[in-house]
Length: 522
Image (cartoon, rainbow, N blue to C red):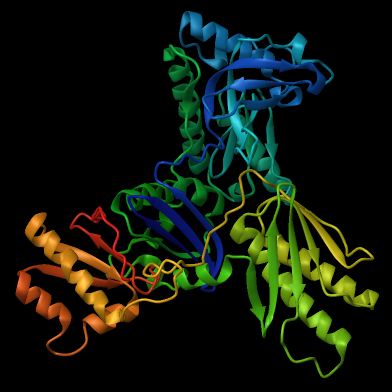
């Protein structure tokens, strides 16, 4: 399987797309100012105890208070709490020299363990979703590519997916010899076969992160305050996704390119050359056919096979998917064979959609009814096979007697929803406009403003591909006329994300130029 990653960074947002055999499989997008908070650690304060829930609400600086259940305090909470009080009053002390307290019992109560206003270190394990605040834990951990470091434990665990008993024993022995005292370690599956030097390097990186976190917590004066933030969004996603099968990682931003390059060099020096800086004239997603796939894959209706389609609805509690055969020609073998064919295709597309949209919680799928038990079993096995590629924890139940399949999938953040419908930028829903040829007059008036009022002589104009073709048409093209008339350097780029008569201006640094007025052709 040929896997590639594409990272598109603009001043407003960063988008990451993963393709497998040129087909879009995962997509993440967020504003540059937005924060992806899972894994972040805060020095917070207990806001309110909830004995009835055996939980509390913690003020960690988010819009809504965070939820912390008693069981999420972790077995080593007493050690963490004692250590935090010690370093906040006396300064930094190595965990290796610290006496570990007895484990916290699982049958205790929140009111006997915490007090209102108490300071504590908490880590985000679940993003705010809808009306709910983040979910927190006090079981602090620092994930790396090969290892997960857990302070205040002294146990080494090896991933159960490593089947070789000899390799498991080797890894356990290696980690025991290199890890500091009073740190627990989980060895991840990808550590199989790795050399001691690679594991030791990452161990030092993770221990340094813990020490930096403690030093920030010591320096905090006003609570709440962040004391550790996860790596950048691009690097954070690569940490979980990266595997040696990647053919290329394309990045269109020099700063992010360097971050990704440094990270890949650290974890897989022999694969560092797969990270490439994209310098093409076209937007990176347009050039690699990502934009088209995004527009065809998101939305309420998703076509997948010879006229068949899915209808995907989102609610507060669950996601509902309806499978429709559409206007496809019936299978010559009969209705049952036709239903099976459509359902198998729907299972393939649904597994892709779950990853693509990062849909979590409960998913209920209404497949086309099938009479034969063996066909229903085939569909269930196909869905299970497709979901093996999904990194999120999930559980799939066989079809019920009503033809419904129930799936639960780990949810740590809201599902990705993109509005792929376009509002007409010229008539604003009125239905009639002047000739589209007038659009070039609008663009020329904007260029005149840029050159003569804003004194900008070099810029890039992004327009719909059809509009670009019209502007560049002929020997004495409109573009050449603009260059001769205004004496400017203009580069015209086709952008598939723009509607027919939309446009965007960018300066030499790649920053969008705000024209401060909306043009309406009536």
